[in-house]
Length: 72
Image 1 (spheres, rainbow, N blue to C red):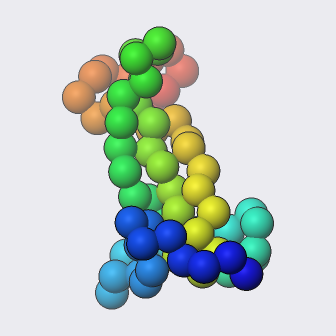
Image 2 (cartoon, rainbow, N blue to C red; image 1 turned 30 degrees about the vertical axis):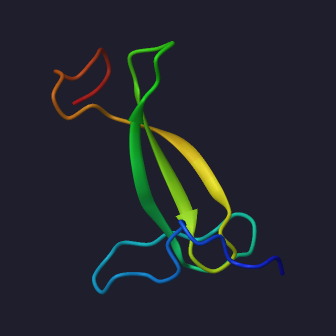
């Protein structure tokens, strides 16, 4: 395994929700940073696995905007 990247989280905080990492299979994938995509008006959340430090960007619903068509 490659050495740990120092600016990525290395442990899960108590009570923090986790998901299964698609790369290593550990239940240690956590939401990390939030940014707005400049090309689209959508929020992107970077998720990081604290076991293997794989990262993945996922679209995040914008809490400040009203729900779109088909959303409740």
